[in-house]
Length: 330
Image 1 (spheres, rainbow, N blue to C red):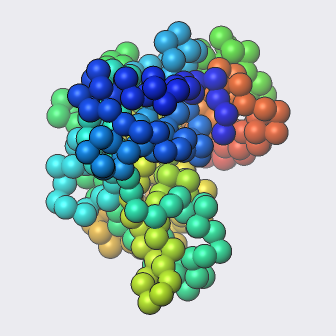
Image 2: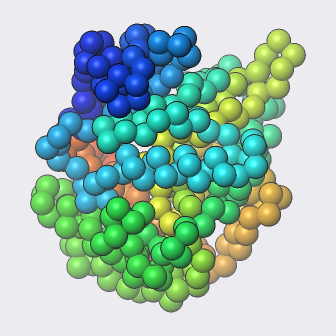
Image 3: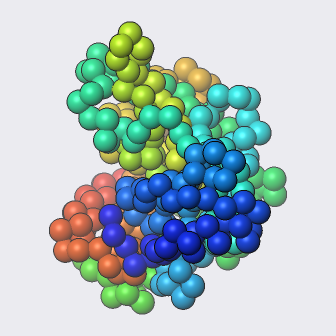
């Protein structure tokens, strides 16, 4: 996906950037075009290792409030996940974090949405259970300062309790919507009221946990199997949307890949790995609010990123459905 937030570098510029910060140069092999926010290049380092360079947006690029400094937030997520037992949450290794880029190891496999029909239908249930288990282990990571919301670099979008943090997150994207004149199709005051009405449910969340919040199939790498080898998940990527909050929020993006309801393989894997998803009335109310928040992000980001009319129409439909769900629970 093309986006105004993507920074383009020539092979020579990329080599110079790595030499200046990482201390070793590289040879550009190809651009990885699946991302929606950052530019990513697959390179070969001078010592022969393959790697991925993930670039921050160009200086002066318009971004949403929560996106300010999220390259550092993603680096933090990689570091914290590396503290878990080996293999608990498969992801790339963070080789270097600079002000302008991350340098990551190359994952085996390919995005789940690209593997498509090469994954046998019989393998899908187990993969969804495995994804649930991996997500549960990711959600065990807790912030060192005990705060909810986006990481400390964006402290205005964090708070000591989840209701306050989530309200600040929604307010920020609504401010962005006003700036970009985003077509929300619902008055912002009504959306803020929906969040207030869910305050009792948000207050049930008392322990902040790492939430990826972007686990759609394009961010889950898999090996499709074959030649006697089973299909398997090889890693999660793109942690930049991550925040400290309610693990229930993961179900919103996980639903893009299949059933994420209480009787699903995904939830069976999640609870089997020790995670808790109770699907109570308050839980479902929170889930509707998280769908609303994602819908707002999807619509509003179309402005600064310059996405086209077809994608904007999809985002508006997603947001409209989220509004209906939230009103149902209010």
